[in-house]
Image (cartoon, rainbow, N blue to C red; front, side, top):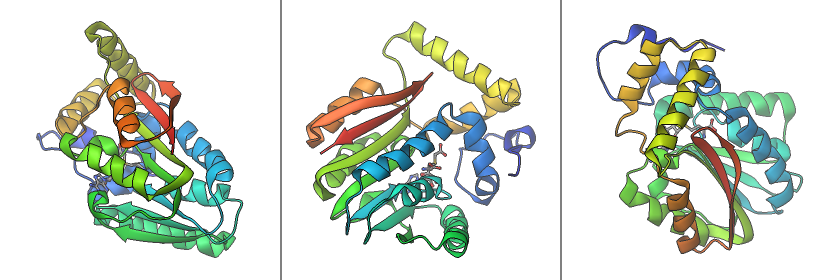
Length: 244
Ligand code: GEK
């Protein structure tokens, strides 16, 4: 795994982008930056085993290098399924295809995967039993989020599951500051310097737009989901499951 040193070197201020430099260090970046990331990937495998139905589609929206896709594929226990892994960044989809091809060669899994370079706001979702957005919705403009949740709800079969993992903010300013501090300390324990942390924070400003857990819950209920629960929280990162 290549070590993420992007903000050791990059001092000029420019917004964060999912380019080749980021794709090259991505697994290390997520592992060191997102508290609970490994737990979400593990749970996606367990949830796939429970919720994916035979002859249905699964979606990994904002798949990056396909970590959640591979977890879903390993978890699926039924025949006739297909996973559609979507990302808008070519640097991600090109590598993701290579990683999936390697997984195919090594394990010949029964579930097929289509890696698609597309904007998740423009894709069709149909006959779905599981949809994953693992830290992706946070990168969409706020005004586009309701429509995407409605599209996902519409494309899910009854009893289908969505996993939504996000960075969040707290309504209470003091709590918000505490959670941000705890997250930054977590990054320092994972060998990011204070300077790297502050440069990355500036680069993500207006690129990653977090909302409160309450705002996510309200949106999911208005989109029509019957059950919504936070199953993981680690500082200012949560993972939510919603069932149609
Ligand atoms: C994982 N899920 O390892 N359409 C498609 N993709 C998008 C869009 C969009 N509109 N906006 C952003 N992305 C992965 C990690 S990373 C999380 C997901 C992070 C993509 C973007 O290109 C990137 O690959 C991904 O969403 C977010 O479980 O970097 O914090």
